[in-house]
Length: 180
Image (cartoon, rainbow, N blue to C red; front, top):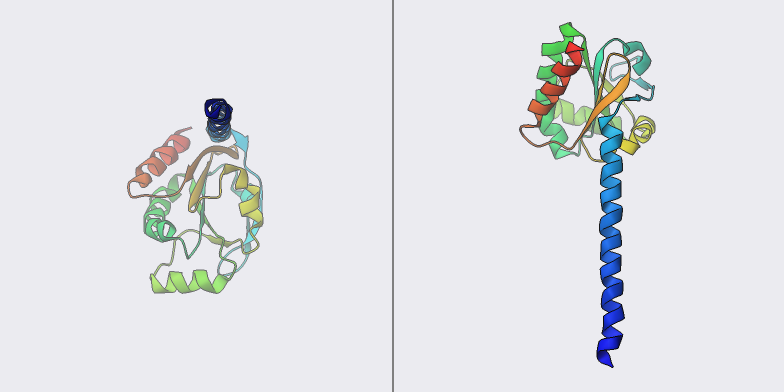
């Protein structure tokens, strides 16, 4: 009697586990398709740290890397000096890096930049209300997140998170897009 009660329960749990794995695989495949293709990058206008505004549409013809970051994000802080080096090195070849800060209080970003003695050579855009982050949320919510856009304005790659050594992948993507 006990075996007949446990049998269906075990089968139900196995079916649930298989369903969860199948859904996870489907989501992974969908994510891979979304980032490996070429979709138009959503345009935006954001205030620039220090004054003015910047529109992504005005950068068509450039290879653009949008890096979403926050002052509270350890990996974001770790990669910032490396991003600055890349921005300086490839700017003359038609590369533009945009740092989109998503701190709700600009003072947090300013305090971290001052403390780290960072004065990036690339524009820091302020997305306090997460408008642009929401536009790009289908590519993930991981911080930092970098979106690579080709000269035609299409998203070509998305990199989620940061660990030492990821800058090699960034450089490979930048070089590939600059050659096109």
